[in-house]
Image 1 (spheres, rainbow, N blue to C red):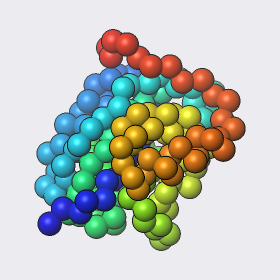
Image 2: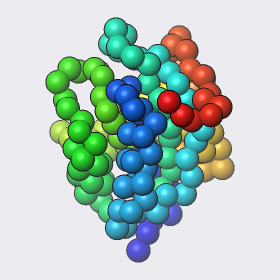
Image 3: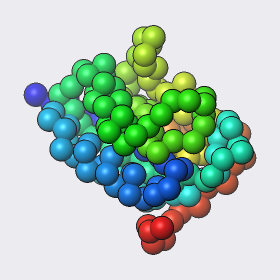
Image 4: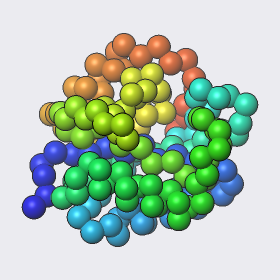
Length: 166
């Protein structure tokens, strides 16, 4: 049985072809058993966060419900990343695809593998602004996102992508 809690993911890529990488990951996400994608944000081009000497990212946020446990969803996201040729060589480095669990309703999760809300969500425009777009009517996550936006000091630029193509 699906939970009423909405789960929010941040999806990004900065290795060509960024658009195809994200579209492939979103298609795989929509086909996961136990996952129902409810909404996705506009696409955004963003400057790299943390390690700035790399290409710009494309980012999108996704809202979903799931019958999977947090650990099982994380395992599936890692599988999608692996199928998208994600390599974890450089911390905050370039990536073909990146799927992060950002919020899971009001849950607070702290395990060696997963922290929810995401440990750096409150510091990242590329996470907060797309998520705010699709969480406005979510009584659990919407207020969390708005509080983080109010306190956010991230100065990195983010711009909406009008026509998603490369």
